[in-house]
Amino acid sequence: MPRFHIHTFGCQMNRYDSERVRGLLLNEGWSPASSPEETDLLVINTCSVREKPLEKVFSFSGRFMKRAEEGTLLIFIMGCVAQQLGRVILERAPYISGVFGPGCEAAIPAAAAHGVFPVLRIDPSRLTEKEIFPPDYEHLWHGAHSAFVTVMHGCSNYCSYCIVPFVRGHEVSRQTGDILTEIETLVARGIREVTLLGQNVNSYRDPATGLDFAGLLYRVAAMQGLDRVRFVTSHPRDFTPPLARTFARIPTLMPYLHLPAQSGSDRILGLMERGYTVDEYLARLETVRSFCPDISLSSDFIVGFPGETEEDFAGTLDLVRRARYDTLFAFVYSARPGTKAASFPETLSPDKKLDRLHRLLTTQRALMASIRDRFVGRVVRVLIEEESPSGGTMMGRSEHNQIVHVVGSGKSDLGRIVAVSVKDRLENTLRGIRVGSVS
Image (cartoon, rainbow, N blue to C red):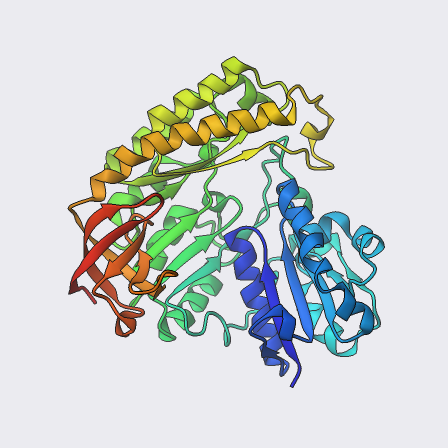
C-alpha cells in the first residue's frame, strides 16, 4: 500500500486544506506515513504571506532531493506558494514532481497514481468556485477532539502588502447547510470544539440566503453535542456590534478574539489600505469588551512597513499598551511580489526592522505578565487534547484559548473538558491542578 505524508506551513486554513487532502488520499487507498523519511509521496502545503515561510519550502523539500531524483519519492507542492510561483517552482527545484494551487488539490491522488511528471495545476478560475474540495467528510479529523471548518475562502480587501487575494482569490462563502452538515459529521465522530475559518471570516454571507456571520454563529451554536465554538480571522473593518454581541448571547462561543491591527499609526494604516483608524480599531475592542469584559484578545502587527517612521512605530507601541493583548504575533515587513506595497521604496535597513520587532515583543512580554496573571487562582475549563511535551502532565486549551498544562490529569481525560485550578503563569502557558471533571 503506497504511503503519504503531508507537511504543512502557515495558517489554520492550510491545516484544514491538508486534512482534506489527507482524506482524498485515504479514499484512494493510500496510508499515512509517520514521517517524511518513510513515505512514497510527500505533499508540502505552503504559505507565501511572508518571505521566511516561502524559503522554508525549498529548504525543507531539498532535504529529500536525492530520493526524488532517484525516483523513490514524489514531492508535490500545494497551497499559496504553488499558486504564486507556479512553473518557477519546477525551474528552481526540478526534483519537484507536481505543483497544485488552491482549488486544484483534488487532482493530487490521481496525479500521484497515474500522472506524467512534472504536473502543474494552477487554474485561477478554481479560486472562485463555491467549494474548493468535494463534500466528503469521511476521513476528517479522526482521533481529534477539536477541528477546523472553513466557512469561506479568499479575500476581497486587497490590503497593499497582502498577497492572499492573488493566491486565494476573492471572497467566496460556503452555503450554511454544507457547513452544518460537516460539523454534524464531526460531532458524531467525537469532536467537541470547532473553529470556523476564513481569511476574513466576519465577511461571510451565505450565497443563497444572505445569512451573515453572526447569524451563522447562532446556527452553529444551536447544534446538539457541540461544546465549544471559536472563529478566526476577523478584519477590524468588518467587525460589527451584532457580531460582538454574540460573545454575550452564545454560551458556547469561547471568549477569545483575534483582531489583527497591523499598525498603530493612522498614516501607515492608510498606506496599508486597511480601511480603519487607530481610534476606530480601539472602539471595536471597547465594544466587544462591553459584551465580554474578560475576553482574551490577540493581534497581528507588521513592523518596518515602507515609510514607517519612529513616530509611526511609537504609535504601534502605544496601541499595544492600550489594547492589552493576551497574545501578539509580530513580523518584519517583507515585500510580496504583485502587491501594491512591493513598489513602495524601502526606507529601513534590515537591522532597524529587527530592532523595532525586538522592542515591540519586549513591550508585549512586559505587559503580558500582568494580563495573564488574572488567570492565576482561577478555575478554568480545559479541553484535554494531548500529553505535554515535557511529559508528566496533560495539556489543552482553556476557554480563553490559553494553553494549560494540567497536573493530575491522565490519558483517560483525552477529549474531556476538565476543571483546572491555575497555579502558575509560565512564559507562554499556564499550569494548574485538575480539580474536577466538567464533561
